[in-house]
Length: 78
Image 1 (cartoon, rainbow, N blue to C red):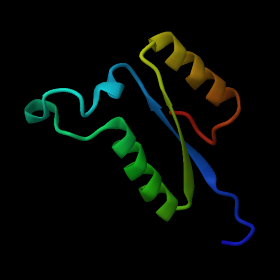
Image 2 (cartoon, one colour; image 1 turned 30 degrees about the vertical axis):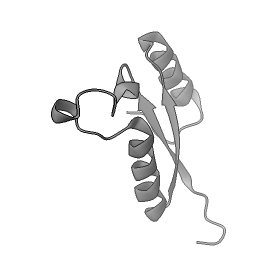
Image 3 (cartoon, helix red, strand yellow; image 1 turned 135 degrees about the horizontal axis):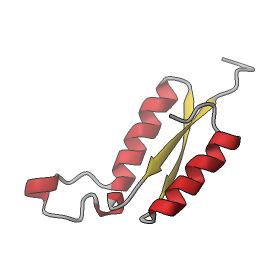
């Protein structure tokens, strides 16, 4: 893969995902946001992607980030 450019995958987390692993594990499990990000990064790396992440509990901030990414900084936004 020498000379190849890794594509960036943005992992955009919205409202309350920072609560993963903090709520009753019987209902919500024990996966934390940090653990989820590690899993996604490991999987993505095996497939030639690098991962960047963004989390906010403010929906407007999430929309602004998505708009910024769609103007440049992401290979695709869906």
